[in-house]
Image (cartoon, rainbow, N blue to C red; front, side):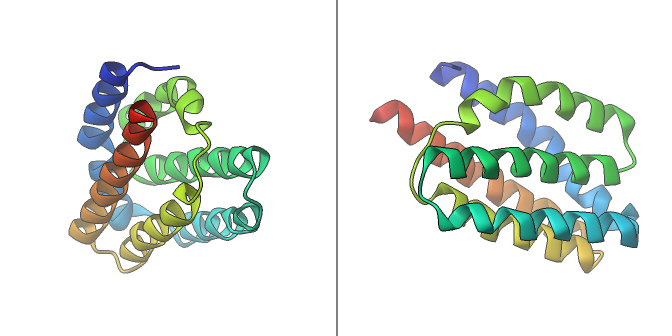
Length: 145
């Protein structure tokens, strides 16, 4: 598991890359990529019905795929590759089970995807920034518990 300083460092780097990836995806995503992102978002919902570690783990796996799909749609192989490399590090902390995190994240993902669908790069970047900041805040609270 990451310590608090490593978690903050990871989020600082994600905040440099992922809003840009979302903005680029809003410009370049194909209809097929948007359809795939929407399917991932819909798949995230059933695990939310269960309030168990296993349900959250399923959500976390779909979450990683959703973020990867956005990075791929950015048309920046460097961004996509860099974010893929982070998955090994982010998988562990995503498995921190906390009630309510998944439902908030699903709503935040929907905002990112809606901006991508509208071809609105600024809104996509803003929605991704809000999502990452909220995620950091939720996970940071685990260190205070």
